[in-house]
Amino acid sequence: MTWSNWRISPFVTSIFFILGVLTLYWVLFNWITTWFHARHINIDDDTVNAWHGVIYMLVFVFVMQLSVVGQSDSWEFVNFHLIAVVFCSFFLNIRMPYYSLLPVVIVYMIFDRSIFFWESWSYAVVFVLFFWSMNYLRLWVPKHKHPWLYYYGAVAFYGGLLWGLIKIKYSLDWDNTLQEYGYLMIFAGLLYAYVNMLTQDSEIKLRLAQFASHDALTETENFAAYTEHIKYLFDDSAKNNLNLSMMMFDIDHFKQVNDTYGHLAGDRVLQEVSATVKTVLEANDEKVKLYRTGGEEFNVLFPGYDLASTQVIVRQIFEAVNHLVIKYEDQEISVSISVGVSTLHQADGSPVDFYNRVDQNLYFSKRHGRMRVTVE
Image (cartoon, rainbow, N blue to C red):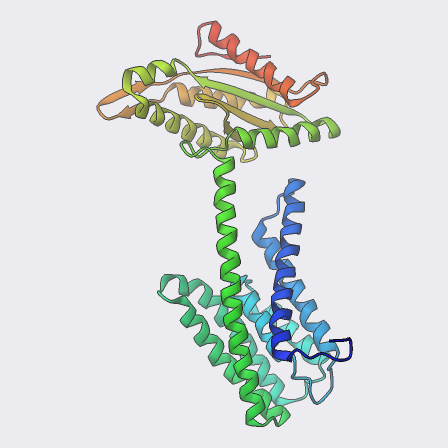
């Protein structure tokens, strides 16, 4: 096998080419999203996925077609184009309205020098319907058993129409047409299996990441997540001279709750307290996050807040939790919290210094009667 002598059949080569293109897509997508996450840039992964998918596949299609534009065999890469459409419309579920999709199709027809052929216009109409149908199918098939049958049926129907139009335009014989149509169906099946395999792997990784960064009982972020976020916020605040404040609280007499009512009652208290605090935070500022950092100990990070700015939210949390009466079986459990609050100082050499000062304020509250707020 040399540069000019390739003994592997084009069909086998095509399979590995398609898988390589898709693998490169996922690698680039993961790199882009990781880059955004590392810099805490607030862009939704679905938005990145949509733009990356459209741009990547357009480049892929136009670059491939460039080598056969205007030639009698310019149909040779049609199956790659159709697989790109299936990938974007079904698996990525990229939603493109007609006023965005039609111009792309027309530009492609001009680029391919096929805009003056009626077959090309018919092909374009079916092509757009194919894209929209796969979009709809993606939302519809999860409700049904054997979704791959509906997927395969749609590809078979539209693929047959499109290859029929290509046969007419280029006067292909039936052997060539049916062979290419068969290749399309094989590629579509491999694509379905490959993407499902990657999706299942991604879902497993997502569940593991969720498990690693979230507390299962209270469904808040845990100490590992706190450690990661405080490191970033501390460095960013120090570097850019930004405000950063922290609230720490724990539930008063929590051991007594466990001893009196049982550990299941204690779990209920933790859940109700965390849910109440999250409700307050969501109503005020979603950038302010709650973390369960110990047994009955919680931290709240306020990026961009000086000490005075935190007081409204701190007071709301304090009042909301201290008015909680938690019903467990036939018992009513009253809850109170002790709170410490501080803001980042220039003298803080590390996140630990900051944490310790807030911790000292919390314990000042506990030593002086509990159910109080100590603000530096």
